[in-house]
Image (tube, chains in turn purple, red):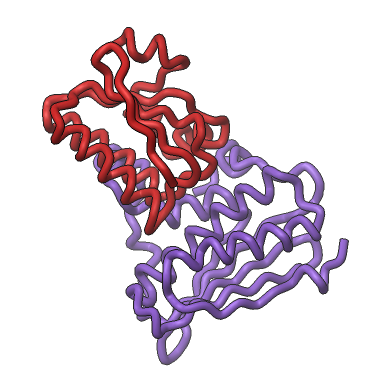
Amino acid sequence: MSRAESQFHLALCSKFENIELVQVVLDESLRRLECDEDTRYWVGIAVREAVANAIKHGNLQDPGKKVEIELRVDGEDLVIRVLDEGHGFDPGRVADPLAPENLLKPDGRGIFYMGKFMDGVEYRFRDGGGTEVTLRKRIVAGVASPERNHEEGER
Amino acid sequence: MKIGIRTRQGVTILEPKGKITIGAGDIALRDSVIEALDSGARKILINLKDVSTIDSSGIGELVAAYTTVTNRGGRLKLVGLPPKVSDILQITQLVTVFEVMDTEEEAVDSF
């Protein structure tokens, strides 16, 4: 495992097509960290959601605004930060997509996805604007399934 | 993402291939469902066997397709779910909403 070589920092303009670029770099980084296919898949899904939220809700698809994505390894944790230049939001006010009244709503599942596929999700709202989402995933062998959080009843 | 369209025993079968994700595949799926409805289709089957990734926007479009088809007097069913897409439908509890069939033959016969 080459941890230093697997870390990256990207700064991209706010276009949805750039999510594919993030996916490619992320996947290669996770391969170098010897993450299994399931881990790469589910972490990839979660990061796609974080970047999509940053582009859509944070930067309001303004291509002049940047989204930054940073990956580092902290002990046995994969730590991915996604930063935008938006005005932030209140995570406590995000509706539960599993509530019967929300089940048929077409949106509102991005944050739910992140919570299900990662071991930790934190938000920080920077002074002067900008949201920072930190995603954590334990990358020891055998930890990969989205059902892990599901079965533990988290979120 | 490309979407194939064909009919079998009066059922319109949509076959998206690749990623149903924000900004691309989600819009293509929406357009193809509306196009099918506008051309008179009311029995719609989405075969997801060649879908590799579906993000929350893609799931949202599936839900929107379901409600749009239902509101226009049609029925929409799913078939061919790859394991990870199936996982996502389980996690989002949308398996309780969609009629998910095991085989295309069974799905077509069930309309």
